[in-house]
Length: 227
Image (cartoon, rainbow, N blue to C red; front, side, top):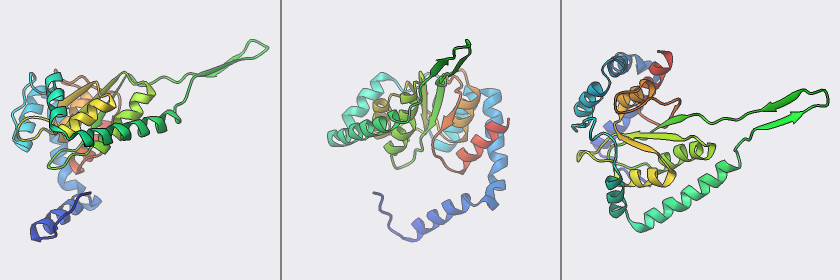
């Protein structure tokens, strides 16, 4: 549960957030998003690094953009054991739910030699966007990664904005590990969506992108689909 004290600053932030989601204001942000997406497509890692430093205040290089095993281990040490248990139980429930939705291939041979059937094949890769900022969103992590994991997607990539210390929020990182993400990158915003859509030297492209985000993320998805 998130509790917000409705002081003047909080009211202004809430109003600003709502206005950003007003379709009548989309045009204000489309030009900026278009520039970011096109720049990442053209310059790859160089553009991703520049925008991460500009918007998140963190210097990320191709050598440090991907989360390491050591960082995952460190995250487990920073997260309360009870919370880890809650996430483990949540992951179990989500996994079991989606396993009931899973579709399977089937084939039927007719007497006349006709073969009918349906072949269900998982995508080769999927990208999951997880918002960053002051709060952690483990539910978004679990509910986006686990369906892909159950479906049999072999490569599941998560992107999320880094904190000021250049690392991923430990709760978010633990959730990603529990869910089965194969790669986690410290990048957010429109630049992260563009990196997933077109690929960079450090982040190979994916076949599908899911996950919530702000207006810049939403418009970046739209831009990448149309490009």
